[in-house]
Length: 308
Image (tube, rainbow, N blue to C red; front, side):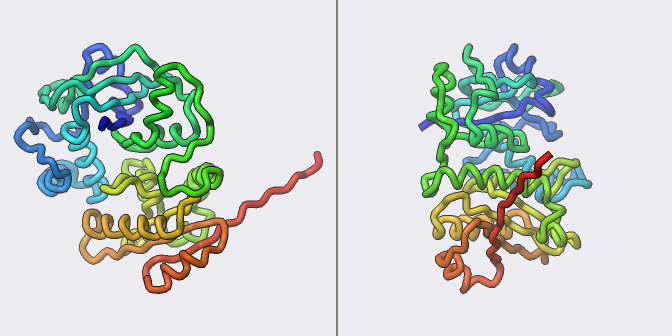
């Protein structure tokens, strides 16, 4: 089974033209050494070794930022398999599509020195032609993101076929319309975070001025929002129900909390969770009755017309 990835080729796609011309994708993260002998099958083993190296080279970075960087470096160098498909923005609103054709190699003193050879197809996908769901996935912050759940749409776009604009991308989604609306709500929540009750105590996690806490990657998928308490004592995982089955969203939140606790939290740092849904949900409340560290919130959407 092949997988699909969105890969950024430098900040704001600054190296895209060279990568397209020379048939490769790559990453940097200022780890100037050949990784050929240091690419285990398990990314956790890679992170365990290279997070301390990354932090020693970047003492201003956090463990969360280091985990994001090392995870992306492992994914580009090892996690993406030969035969997998990559979509890379060209900086002008389009995505070039290619197939990874070889193993990792190191190009010292070059841009993006940790590289994989790629066969670029003639196919170009315009961002304007994507569904909102695919736009959100390809627009996530970070060097690399997994977009395999959009395989059918990507293949149709590569073939020049039109695709429906409302697509459920999660097997646990019961209501595709709710999924689409609440994905927009996630973006609205991020943009207006400081005006919310959660924003009084927590900040969405930032690295180098970018909100890397939205759609933060984990080993069981990207969590919706990762925030940190203003006094740095606690990390917060925020999940929107997004039309999913109640048991699924509770289980996913717990898995994300376990990941953050084991992989990202600093010593003594607590981890809490929040689930947000539009309607009251008895099943969620029952599931959370035995959990002391997950809260349930409802949201309201309202508007009014003003005669001009």
